[in-house]
Length: 263
Image (cartoon, rainbow, N blue to C red; front, side, top):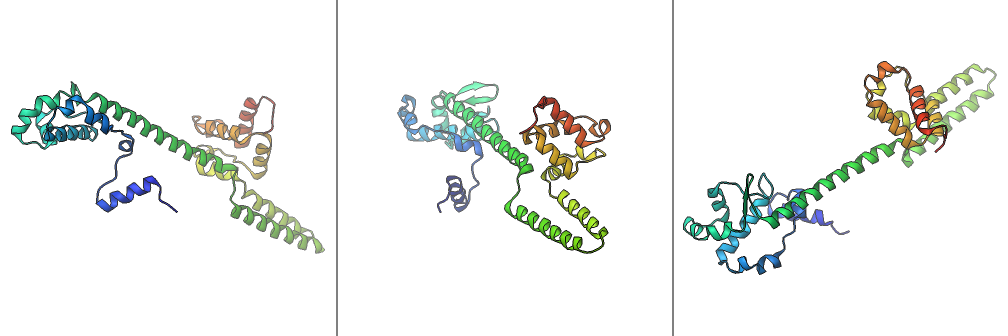
């Protein structure tokens, strides 16, 4: 199986002993043909072309992305030109940059930096959204192993009830039925979801039971239940205002469902 482009780049940086690029730098486009055909670049000496390219690249890597510092001595050091050569080439090189309160900037390079920053931010937000959606969907999804374990435990408990029912005394069978109900309560994903993600809701006196979870999921869609749980979680002093998670959640869901229950 081949390596992804991102993984290939990481291995290259590792092999060269260099740190990887920051995410936004990977989106910056540099148009070499346009650069080489520029009238200003054509009129430069070899050392001036190199110095100009170094200034463009260094502007990307500053704290103010896309801007060179105001200090001319620092700019000279970025070009790696001797002081005498810098004095001769300074006017020609700095002609390609505009000055503002942040420093010196090249219009085309600054445009590329701003585009790259926006794209990097959008990618980051999208990744966070996917992670949040995956956590929410976990409520009503069970892995095959979890489902198999659930079936095995319930089947074993059911068999135990049958064995107890054959005996003359009924009291052990009644106790066994109660233990099966307790086992079933442990498996409802809605209870696990509340336990994992809703700190304030857990402070309410009466928490959800298995049967109540079944009633809620039968009446309302999972999206509606999740949205109301989040609203309850963000309600100030929720545990002081309400004493039952089930009653509160059911009433809030009914308001939005408008009497049209069902998924």
